Structures are given as C-alpha cells and as structure tokens.
Image (tube, rainbow, N blue to C red; front, side, top):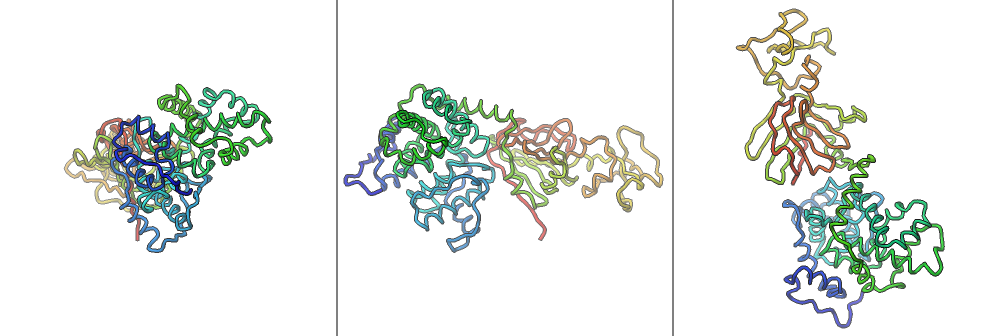
Length: 504
C-alpha cells in the first residue's frame, strides 16, 4: 500500500491513554494508514500482552535459528506438522521475507511442541513480519501471543479441539446475531458447520492486505473477540450482497471466499469495522462460555487433544527426565527409564510399561527422591522359580524377600533364599519385572501414555498425571513409589520440560 500524502498523526502518549480510548483509536483507524507508525507501535502493544513468565524471546530465536539453519538463510527443513492443511499466506513478502517467515514457523514448532493445530498462526506471523525490525522480533511477538495467559482473552487456537470449538462457537453466534444470513447458509449447504469451519480463512488470508492489517490493529488490543465480530459483519454483508440475485452456485464455501477477496467492491474497511463493533450484547464472557460448552461437547464425542507432538519429541530417547514447574512455583518430576514408543505395544489401551529404574522426585520447596517401592522393601516380592523364567540367569548374590501375603519359603532349588533383616540388601532396579512374583500389578505401574494424557506411578493413586493439554495435573500417593503428593494435589503447569538421553 502506498503511503498517503498526509499520514495519520499518532499521539505521542497513545499508550498512556485509558484502555477504552486506546481501543476507540484503533477501531477508528488512528494509525490505519501509517506503516511507520505501526512499526513503532506494534512491538510496544505486544509487550503489554500478559503471558507466561518463561516465554522465548528474540535472543532465544537467534540461538535456535543458528543451531537449526546455520549461517545460510536458506533451509530445507519442512514446516511443522501442526501447519498441515493450514494456509500459509505471504502477504506480498519478498523472497527473503518468505524465507524468514518459514524460519519463524519452524522455530515455533521446535520451541512450542504442544501446538498441534493453529490455522491463524502463519497469517499472523506474515503480517507482523511487515512491521518488525527483523525476524527475531517477529518471533518474539508471536511467542507472546502463544504464551498469553490473559483470562478469557485468547489470541491463537493451538489444538484441533480448540479450533473446532471456535468453529462451533461462531456457528452459535451467527445463529443468534445474524439469523437471516444463517438461514441463507443453512438452506444452501448440506452441512452448516462445515461452512463455518472455514470462518477464519474468510479473514486470513481471505481479506485483502489493507483490510487484514486494519483487523490486526484491533486484534492486538482485544484478542480473538475481534475476529468473531469481523467475520459476523462479513456474513451480514454477504447476505445483503447476494439477496437480490440469490446464491449463484452450489459451492457456498467458495462463494464466501470469493466475497471476502473482493470485499472492497461491497464495503469500505471503515464501514466494515463500524458494523462489526455495532453488534449489540456481544461480550468476551459470552464467547468464553460458548467455547467451554462446545469443548465439553466435543470431548464427550471423543474429540480430544492428541499429544502427538509430545510423543514425537520424546520417542527415540531412553531414558528421559520429566520436569514440571507449577504456577505456585513448586518443581517436581520423574526419571523415566523406557522409551515412550513402548506405549504402542499396549495397543489402544493405556497399559503401563517401564522398569524399576524409574523414580519420581521433588526439587522445590525440598529435594527428595522416591524410588520403586521394591528396592527399599524387597520383602514385598519373591523371586520367580527358575523353571518359570523366560531365560536362565544366575541367582544374585543378594537374595530376594518373600511376599507379604505368604510365609517365607524355605530355601530350595526352585526359590532363592529369604534374607534375614540383618542381611537384607537393596534390589537391583535393572532386573526385569519377570524376575519377581509381585503381590499385585500396582507394584509395577511405572509409566503410561495415551491420547488422554500421561501417568507416572499407579496403584491406589498416581504419583503424577497430566491431562491431554499438558496444562493441568494431579499428584497423590501411589503404591509403585510409596510417595507423598509431590506438590499441591491439583496443580496447573507453568513450565514443562523433557530432557532426553541417547547412547552415542
């Protein structure tokens, strides 16, 4: 877009204005035609976004980019899996800018492995790249939106579940606030939700660049609520535009996309925004309540956040160390002896696997380790008779104990001797479970993983369990490690890391 002959004058104290006045200025296009003004203002607006304490910044990007791509600016790395099927608009970026955009998206995939689906993220990165000093600053801006923890003010959907819930929410809002347009679409489409599932693409990359950046102006201040408003205004205008002639074809989705591309023929950007913010009784809380209800409905139908990214990043490493920092500042974790790919051997069930090398621990407020209960209490198990072992193995020097449910057997060729209290020794955690006759399966529940989350320790409770989003967890005493709760029983994850080790 060419600079206007009389660029807009942005007040020097614009960021010091009250929030309501700042929103009004953005909606009215105070910096709508000043590219240089946007470049100065955007980074300062984004720094005001409330986000998690530990969020990757420009320095982190430079370090990761240097490690991934080296000095050359061209990379053969593929785009992250979470962008599969998502449009990646370039918005008139130069070839160098397109390369920078791809590098930013690849680094986002490397540093945010919990993102599984995010259709909005590429368009947002491409637009911000126009107004960033360099790709590192653009990456930092995107990271703040991803890590935002502002209540009821989400910026970017980061999973298929969240995206589907937002599509259902848009359908609910369209039915309530645009009944005539909703009726038109319902009469022309076999599946209304399928039409509404592309509502974000009407805006990005659907709208022309000049319209898209005006939407971005208010999005930076008000979050996802703005996108619902603009899309509803587009839907209303679409009905008005097609009312005289009716729908021309059977592909309603293609007609909506074409209408968005040619929106300048129907309404100016100022008029579009005016109509969007003129919709009454439309609050952020209403959107949030609808999204929560729709997420719950989707979960009940079996649509969950599949943690493929977690498993993809962890598979191939053995052992791994899981570290969790809660929002209360507590730190705990687990040492996990087996490769997470072993969970696939259980099929569809979430069976436990692992060895006695596994243990759980706390770091803050106090450091403590809780090993496999049979290491410290060998009397809880007895040895498997040689005739029942899968392969012959010599008897260990330190004999094993007896079951707590049966009297101690006398030494015989088929059983190892029972230690006296004075001779008791620690069991080797390297011995396989098949070498023991355990009192119950709960004594060997080390680690388990499924699409519903991950579990460490079992029997009477779970030492650590995380839900599918990896945002909420639970800890309690379990029989496998005989541990107390590792932190507050119900906790929210602030930071999660997995460190992998692999033999050279």
